[in-house]
Amino acid sequence: MNVAMPVGMVGVSDQALPRQDLFKTEFYNDWLRPQENIVAGPAMICYRSKERLVAMAGPCRARGIDNTLPGTVALFEALAPHLARSINISSALCVGGSPAFSYLDASPHGIIIIRRSGCVGYTNKAAERFIAKTGVLTTDRRERLGSKDEEVLAYLNSATAAMQADSYCAMPNSLLVRTKKFGECMFHAHIFPNEVEHKFPCSAWADPVAGAVVVSGQLGIGGVDYDGRIARSFGATLAEASLAEGLLGGLSLYEYADLHRLSRHTVRNQMRSLLLKTDTANQVEFTRKMLRLASPFLAV
Image (cartoon, rainbow, N blue to C red; front, side):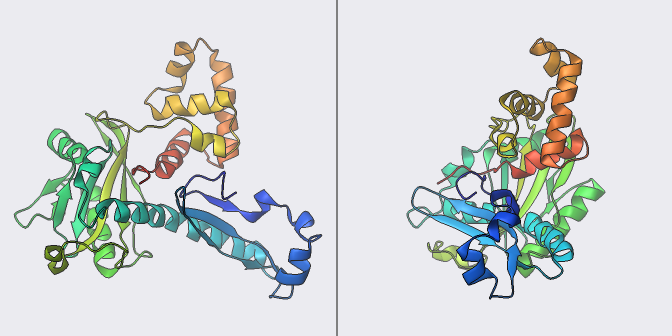
């Protein structure tokens, strides 16, 4: 699972080794069973590079597992995007002892850095284009991020407050926003760790970086480099992964069928299979899940 799971995706140990097989192992009988009878739990990959792997796991005891496991999985899924992306962007901001903003400018995702005071500290080129062409986001005289849309404004205020309080629990879930210019966009808010290996420039300590608001999805300002790998990690076939790639690229189900000369019956069956494999109820929920798992930061 450590090798196969994308960064930020939550898996359950039962998927790697069913419990009936686990119970036959020496590891379980000599180690897990004596320690409060641990039988399952979720896990996620926070960060992966050629030299390093950072993972998080939550063991669950046999007693009451039907109640504790679903809640633990839900908690991991809420934390996953924040943890994975905060690690990556903290590394990206501190390369060679100074902020590597050119790295962020190359990203097709809109990235807006928020400082501890709540002021905008940096906006990459994609975010600048998004702000200029949609009017969804605004900044006031104090350089605080705002919006004329009440739902977006409430999201930004909640996210900024969570960043200032260093509260992952208070961080709002990703918000789907529809725009005329760039179609569907997903707003992610992320908290950065207070302490990182690299030091920020001294001038930043007066108002250090607290987090970021990231805009990803069908932006039309570079787009998401989505090649179906996330769908395949859920067990999707190559044909199903190709459909997922088309949907994330902005095609409707029937536009994809016409483009690839497939019957509508075939693509509907492929879509039903994708929903089943990704545990999503409909196409909108599927799109949201894929966008949430698509990292807005390149590996460093």
